[in-house]
Length: 287
Ligand SMILES: [Zn+2]
Image 1 (cartoon, rainbow, N blue to C red):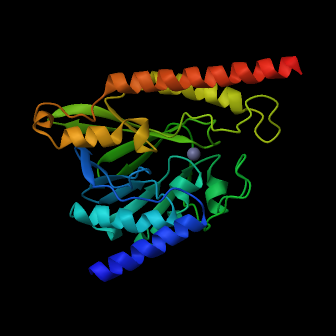
Image 2 (image 1 turned 135 degrees about the vertical axis):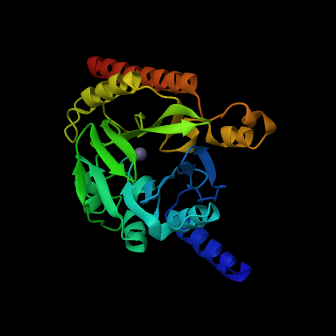
């Protein structure tokens, strides 16, 4: 690509993003996480590439504007976007799935979505809790998943765990990798976050939301995690770990292998959920 067209794309991208009033999408260097698992997302929005001899898997498309960044990242690692056979998601919010339709068009890949989020993706954002005006391009869903279902391609098996609350079909992905000759369990947390404005009690639009979050924390605490990943890089300190991975120290240990970081993060987020629930319950009793 020429510098001029890169500038034009960058200007168009900045303009589009400003129009929608959100932080600019910045590229980030694609990098190996462990084994055949790579980070190909932007600075803020995580996308993971899992390569196999029979084609590749992508988790998350980001916004539509993220898709060209993902393509550059995939190609910079020596892989081809058209070899992507499966498109998966962390959860049906615009910053992880609004690019699904474009990514599907570019790859011809099958789109697999957890029950609870499948209709939101198929209807381009319709039916979300709280974000009732958020819309994106509709994307046909080829397969609807249930909790614990396996997704297989080229000798790799991913397990989809339904970890609802943040969305009804929020999905935590797990699979086995080999890191420096050792087996390593990868976990990509779908989202444990109680967003600003979320009502955990007396929620007419999502009555079971608090029970769903509670279930999610039980599941997350029960997962074996060596390689700790998430829907946004900031869940697991992606940038700092990437910097470490570029130093000599990374020859002896992989910074993305962080079982203690995973446990601490899940604990922190469960406490935040319990506090919000207690605060909202207390506020109600004072009314
Ligand atoms: Zn979200």
